[in-house]
Length: 466
Image 1 (tube, helix red, strand yellow):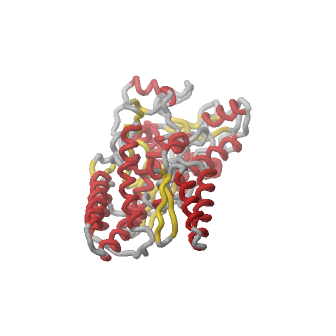
Image 2 (cartoon, helix red, strand yellow):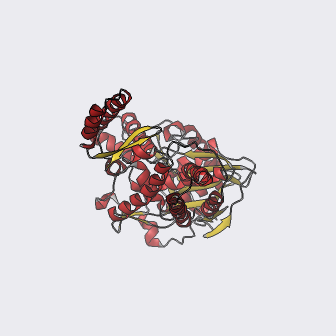
Image 3 (cartoon, one colour):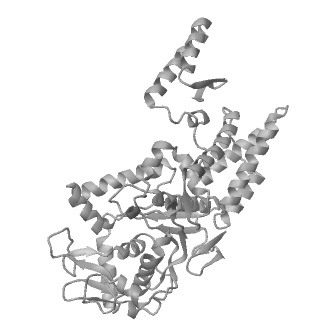
């Protein structure tokens, strides 16, 4: 397996810190608003990475944090009149619901910032003891960037004075303009937590370093974990600062491999709330099925910037439709696990730094070839068996194709109408059993009037939207 390491800026063979095991940590959401397409893209990328690692036989421990204390959260709570907990619980649940809709598997560990304060305070104390941090007269604690000779080596940046000044955090007490807050003293009565450094709140960069040490880190190895991931916007300063905190407070580097996914653009513009184009995932899910969005958002290589537009989304849907039509042709047949040459090629493609272009091309080819052979005369028992095994493998590794194929084509019909159609189908089935063919035909016509078509199969009667 090969992975592009953001630190070394090249594709490297993947070798885990411990044979057969992988520890993966990904930066999760700050829960003050609904998940947007950027969250969806990043979550899908690392969901795919996790699946590919598992398919390669690794025992994966996957952690993704929840930031539930932050200035944005506090401001949103004030505006809404809700408590911090009410707000963060609401948006955490909404995030989980949206991720489930696009097939993102739950992490093994999902620590919250408010549950990790002790770990963060312990890391701050170590940094103070090691002379890599200092406390100001007003009570803030800062990381001393000049005390770390390796600072900026992760992102390979050279800061000029203008950049440094742009990052000044309203304090004249810092030793260096690039120093960042580990603990922010709170004296204005807003939400705060007790600590050895006084009442305050942790700095945002601190929580991931502390959570990794608490939940995942190898104590006796050169690196704390195998892989750290997140969006490209996190490489600097967030991940740079995380890496500095960890190496200066522990006896190891933070991660052996760093993986970052590209930005999401909407119709050519970088997604940004300031531009008003922060397309919420929940809005997209009203128009398209979660699997369609999953298929579309995974169709571009993770390191490339993704340009979201409805034309490409519709094309992606048509591509996924073909897979479901093939699945429909084989519906009702028993699925048996079987290793096929297609599966080997698919995993090889995905193991090459998640080469989705090649993987999707293999899927298109498999679907086309299977349909062509099924169109010819013959029973094709072996082909059907292998195709079903291939479709099941795609579900497992890529996470789409998991629905009943008939229900997949029902999207866009409201639940009330679905219930009416299903009731009519059941009545028609009973009429046919009673050999009341006049009533059966009448019920069929009523069903078709809803703009659907019926398929009578050995497994029962199914319908889909025309």
